[in-house]
Image (cartoon, rainbow, N blue to C red; front, side, top):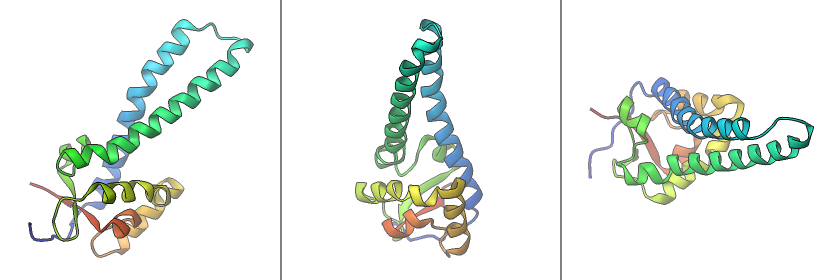
Length: 148
């Protein structure tokens, strides 16, 4: 068990991390979908329903990929997503221990609230809480800290 730390200078990095993690996942899924659709499908009125179905499937796949990125990946990789590793951030419990799956699932579920109004709710909460926690962190008992 390591000593708990108070996060310093993480709010901006957390915002950048969230945008980059989501952007990379969505881009990685979007490019093959677009080339697959427009490369092999003649576009016309008859394909409208097909395209709606494909994009609904894309959206569902993207949601699953984002849940995995924010829950399974940090659980298996020392509390870090790929972008968190790059930026030197890590998720840990408020006592300094690695979070359990339940904590990651709680954080991800409450991201719906934290992400409201383009993330404004989460940003405001991080700015006003002493440990720079968003609602998901407060309920899950986690904190995002800088690592060396």
